[in-house]
Amino acid sequence: MDSDGTVRPLTAGDLDGAVALDARIVGRRRRGYFEKRLAAALRQPDQHLQYGVDIDGKLAGMVLCHVLTGEFGQRDQAVMLEVVDVSPDAQNHGVGQQLIDGLEQAMRRRGIGTLQTEIDWTDTGLAHFFAAAGFRKGPWHVIDCNVVAALQAERRAAAEVDDDVFDSETGEPDYSGEVVDDLPTLARDRVDVRSLDADDLDRIVRIDRNVTGEAREDYMRAKLDEALNDSAIRVSLIGEIDGQPAGFLMARIDFGDFGRTEPVAVLDTIDVGPEWAQQGVATALLSQLMVNLSALQVEQLETTVGRNNFDLLRFLYHHGFEPSQRIALVKTVH
Image 1 (cartoon, rainbow, N blue to C red):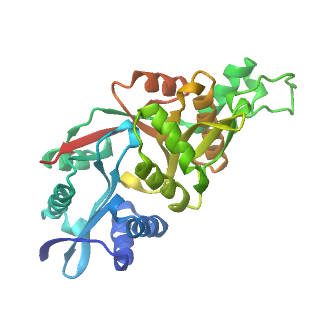
Image 2: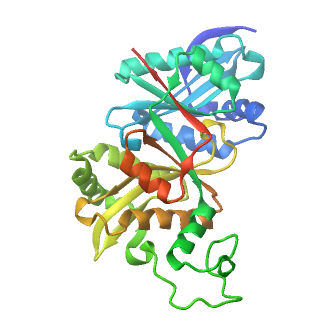
Image 3: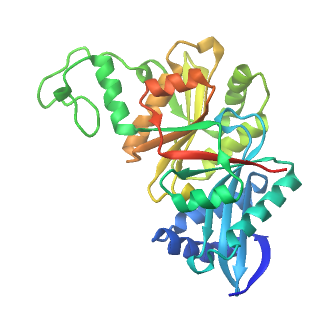
């Protein structure tokens, strides 16, 4: 087994090799996922880092990464390592470390000093690999919620009626038995919530500037492009009150990051203009997101929150989130 020792950028021509390599590890082919990731990297090269290592002319290992420029409340650029695959017969031959070394060299050229990833706490093999590569536990909480359970809890809290009034799967009122009169309105009934579209860029930039005090137009443009073009399924939302943009959230459906084989929704950003605080805008956005995810049969919603962001953690825990079985890891690249 001979490795040429060179970490190289992945190209569109690597699609078949990437799909075959990944299938050997996860047990099934995920062509749609890799098509989307490679296309995104070609469309926005500044937002992605994707590298491979060849052995005997075949792709034997690869890393797929996304450049973070504002997700999860961060202010400095970081790289999120979302896929690291090494062919079973190439493992324990230094290929994984080659990939990490090559990735870090690319980060230094770009002036990015933070490398992040996530693992399931039970994946001892990956935990050992990342520990040996110099990663440590990150200062963030990975939290998630079951979408159906959260919707059921929301309905029950609003209506304060018996469990048998609700359909056990959808969380919506079941009118086949007892009829519920004057069911209280939910936050999403009081705020106009719709999908983001390309014309919303100025609106979300203005909201974000009012919240953060910074003009992050490039970041917002990149996130909006991702929301509109990386998937046929659009789940990012904007909320309006009396026709005025009051808040928005950026979310995506992940079909394969971090080795997942089932779809998971990831909440990247949620912002509400200060003038609309305490009017249920964030609750309406999150509630509508969960309704949309439920219709798409996506059962899990995940996000990452800084450990000191107590207000956001309190809000999300109130709406059904809890500590995830996933752990955030980080490495400083000098």
